[in-house]
Amino acid sequence: MDLHQRYPGLDDLKHRAKNRLPRFVWDYLDSGTGAEQARARNRTALDRIRFLPSVLHGPMEPELSTSFLDTSQALPFGIAPVGMSGLIWPDAEAALARSAAAAGIPFCLSTVASRSPEDLAPHLGQDGWFQLYPPKDEGIRADLLARARDAGFRTLVLTVDVPAASRRERQTRSGLTQPPRLTPRLLAQIAVRPAWALGMARHGMPHMRTLDKYISGAQANLPPTAHVGYLLRTSPDWDYVQWLRRNWDGPFIVKGVMRARDAKRLEEAGADAVWISNHGGRQFDGCPAAIDVLPQIRGAVRIPLIFDSGIEGGLDIIRALALGADFVMLGRAYHYALAALGENGPAHLTDILAKDMQANMSQLGAPDLAALKSLERWPPAAG
Image 1 (cartoon, rainbow, N blue to C red):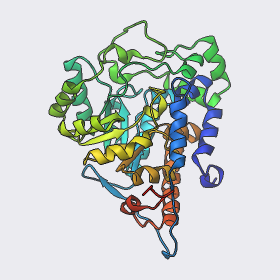
Image 2: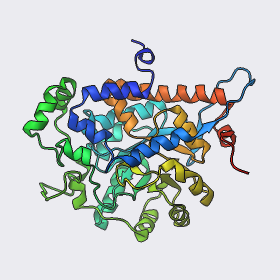
Image 3: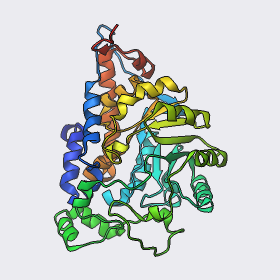
Image 4: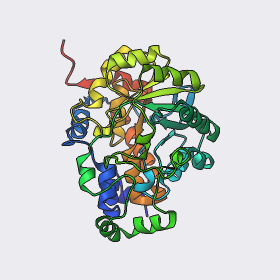
């Protein structure tokens, strides 16, 4: 079967994923917070960004390779962290890591994934990133960094936009709790999704294996959208950032930044890159679209910028790069692909995104990624 004939775009993968996942798993992956206006705002703002096509350039095969944080990258995008990926599809983190390694793109593992850094070590390529949800205890913090480093992760990502669990009302309505408990309601949803159910039967219900070392049988009265990681973590401050900078000897990225003044201060604090994100609309429903703050942050700092939030295709990646991003990460999209096609899904999505970028860059007369910085926008800027 030619996957490009049957699933030519992310929407096709998303539709199939929805039909293969239990309702509570789908809502965990797909939902935002509040009325989900921030999530909708991301899409609307990206659609407002338009460019004038350029003609008469002759045959063109746009080059997509780049260099990011002193590492050669085959493509200008990678796989973002998603907590409890193994709930979305059995052994998701290993499948995503293998696909990233094969494609030569970064894979970022969450602290609250269902696989530990040690589990992922055999599957990592040359560019594994570890996302830190910040532990309060300095000893645990130091141990996590050592474990990530020893497992082969070269880049540390501190997530700073989750000071507390968001409510995520749609996720809550679905009946999912943390840790997941198989209530009669959830079992009824599982019964009509046999592929997911069989996979979980083989691998077992996921839990946050990275934290097993620090929490043994802990129970707490947590909100349904929180998880056991909240027993350990804190809301970081500037001293926390400086501690991590001193104690991590590889590239250091700070994720979840939406203000130019914060990005500038992080640059001064020694961050190697800033990751612009509104968490895909999953944390705060009153924020602007992430793409709308990108140009202002680009103007405030000289260090590389990563972008996520709302990316659904190669054209969206072009939009982010044109407005000042140096690299793009996708989280939900790769999990839609994995749920749709299993192990084959992530590689197919990578191919979709690369082909979509090249087709659109040909329309724009852009032979390489550097040319995206000078695309002609429409409507023209005032004045």
